[in-house]
Image (tube, rainbow, N blue to C red; front, side):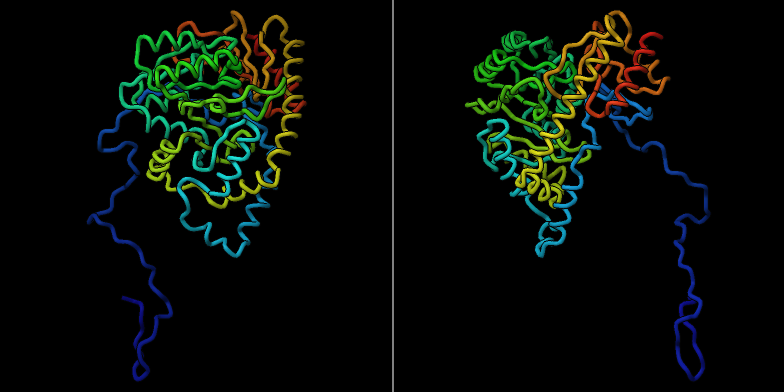
Length: 424
């Protein structure tokens, strides 16, 4: 076969020129081949509520939906801790399979952090570490919702959550959102007509309107959940970023009945690519969610979780939050000043108490037209479609993210927005 050479009276030797091994074709004759564009078997095609919210834009400047500035992320500190664990004598332990529920060190530190910052009286047993808040919502909905059961969501709202619930088989019920947050009177009327299984709410800096659920409505919601025995999924994606005053504590901090499931993440605290989220709930639900998480994704990335635990333990996260809050507060004020100056009487908005974006409406001007014009000028922005489940009658508004733009970029972005509005 060309692998060996025989020499008389000397023996058998490895060939000096080895053959090149090539796979042989299954077919007798070779034919041109390209990978199929579609499967030979049936695959259901679903019509999703939104289809471009997370597509990376190519524009130089972007008013995104509200993301942190990754240039401020404490990546050097995270790498420091990651490297430290990589050099430990017990590093091999963290490179093997670990706890599905997440690093014990991280859950301990996270319990302390949530207690200190949010008033949550929870233990590590109440916490499941996930790949961002999105996975946490998916796990909760798959456990709680069966096909045909009723789930309430805000309108407008975060369609990324609604898709998760719809994938679990839920019938979506849309609750109006006003300046005080979700209309809880409308929730009560819904409960009188239907058996509500779950309600999804963003009490701080609602997506997309940035409003905060009032204290009175929070209490009313907890009373309804207790009376009608439905679960409340509380999405607190950017609680740590508040500028106006002390934020209202989360619903889960005063939930004495076990109705509230709390989800959050470090994706806004550090950077979207750092996929460490958490699900906080009574132990019996955490046990079921841990079992399901094991089926979906055996466990998280242990070294990253251990590094994050150290950042919490050392106070690095607290120091980063203080620094970032100051910068984002200044950027919020700058955007509000620029909009009042350049688009007075055109862009209407309330100053958001926190978060990474503001909600602006443009009267009778079409946001889709404005967004299309802005894109031609090199400015990316949403066109308002990804906030509404029911398209007819939608408010002509859009989220303008300020956190990821520095002062120079902000001035330029508002200038381009003004040109787009004038050309709409």
